[in-house]
Length: 272
View 1 (tube, one colour):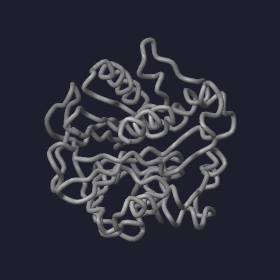
View 2 (view 1 turned 60 degrees about the horizontal axis):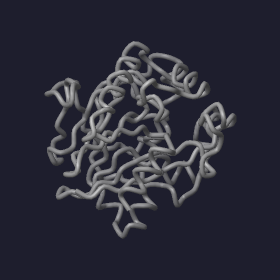
View 3 (view 1 turned 180 degrees about the horizontal axis):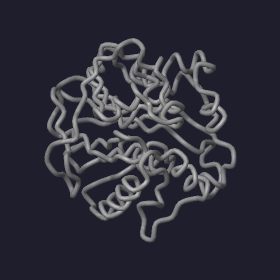
């Protein structure tokens, strides 16, 4: 399988040093790290970042989101535009796997209406029936108002690298797995991909800063506070961060979060 690393939304929150620990990195603080995987089952997209409609009509995005992260809103950064720039048609994307359905992860679903969208059942339930103010703010229902072909996955399955209830995804190669990483949201998941040269683990928003996987772990104060503000289940989030920190010592696994620019730049350089 060939894996492409895509940044599908540059975000520039105020207070750069509190977020990055060092200030602005390469003109941007945060990315929306998505994967495009070439498989025998067609193209597989892991997360979508912001979509064409988000960029064309930014006022459709929640005010709190636009104010907090100040997205760049560049059409060229959308998954749709990058898929086409690689020489594919949008229809070639047969499957989308979502870590979760926050606004900056699900905006591009509308750009691939024929794709099967894989999501944990708990995450889809939270998006459809938000229980709290936080859940009502984080999910933007018009991003999936087109009626995606949902493939809901219950928390069940085997084990992988110490994680339990890891799920194979029907219709996809067995080298792609859904890994439960609840905490940031009720049904948050990671996606593990066996590239043949080692594993990639897209950890979504299970953590936000590469220093959290080092020993001792570190995190800038702004991101540390932000993770608490947007968490749904604290105990589960902290337990999963600790497990990811342990897994980071495995040289056969490359772990990355959705928004860390340092991790994105490193992996992008390796796969060029």
